[in-house]
Image (cartoon, rainbow, N blue to C red; front, side, top):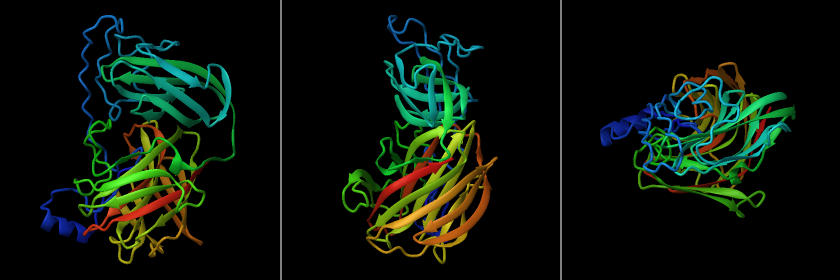
Amino acid sequence: MRSVSFLARSSSWCALFLLITLALAFSGCGSSNPMATLPPTKPPAAQPPTAQPPAQSSYPSTPPVPITWSPQTSQLPAPPACDPPTSSCTPPDPKGSNDFPLTVSDPTDKASVTSPMHVVASATPKNPIFFMRVYVDNLAVYFTYTSAIDTQIFAAPGQHTIEVMAEDKQGYISTTILTVNVTSQAAQTTISGIQNMPGWQSCAADFAAGSGRDGQVCASGNPNPPTSTMTEGQSSPAMDGKSAKFTMSGPNGYSNELYFNAIAGGNNVSHFTYDLYFYIDNPSAPQALEFDLNQTFGGYRWVWGSECNFKGDTPPAWDIWDDEAGLWRQTNVPCNAFPANTWIHLIWQFERVGNQVHYISLQVGDQTYNVDTYYNNQTDWTLEEIDAAFQMDLQQPPISYNVWLDQVNLTAW
């Protein structure tokens, strides 16, 4: 089990085991947390890096903007497009700022596009990148710690101002501002083959150093990370010749590994069908298997976290994440033992309703269960995205196992 896009929870017997054997050496026992982009409880405020002007005077010609905020704690929007050395300006420079090269290749200025629009951008700062963000009409809808963006952004039909922003770790900022006309949005949009898309990230109990969220809670569980890998493009076993293989092994039980991918952004979709197939070689090995979806914009995050809790519930059942309470809630949907080496079809129906998540229904194989449960969303959250996530949890004593995912699709409207 895990803690949501980084959930945290433990079964009572597991917690007792840890109290006796590990003397509270770690905080989660086989718990998990539904992501991307990803923690169930409010993370500690990130410490902003100290901004020091570079020694050279030729690059850039103006001093950097001191970094006095962090992506997790700043008020939205982040520092607007304007020229250093000021850290804010009203109104923003319509041309943006250009402390280092920032290229937006798609869409082009004054283009007519359909929603979701394809946004492709890259930044090449001399210093390490801090983050990149996409705004639609001053609303942050997509975030990454990398220096490149290639994603889908949902936006309502009409005229919009799009801003792509990048900041490096010395505080230099570049932005590009353009206008687009969204002519239409399809009744439904399906993002297909997510298991083979680029951009997958992973983390164990905490985010690793250098990840942009160093030390924050990720998948919870044993602080000693498991041995886990993801390999895309597997021809066998596969339904279409392009499955993704996930491995999990010790040396320590109650350790977890979360895999997540920020596949889109935007606030113009609120209904989701998360449809996938999974295949497991040793069904008795996992503590739990978790399947999550997250949507974040405007300082709020809606988390639909679910896990088949093999070892923590009696009898085994599907749990869903209550983000406001920071707890897994057991449903009346049984988590029956899955047959080994067999493709299992899983379909979740989700909905965002105001400040709540709505778990509508779950289909496992040919059986559909009415869940119809609402929980409040998570406030004070940035790192904007729509992300899909999968987590593997290792029981105690640890037993190695493998899972393949195939035909992972997200339909949004």
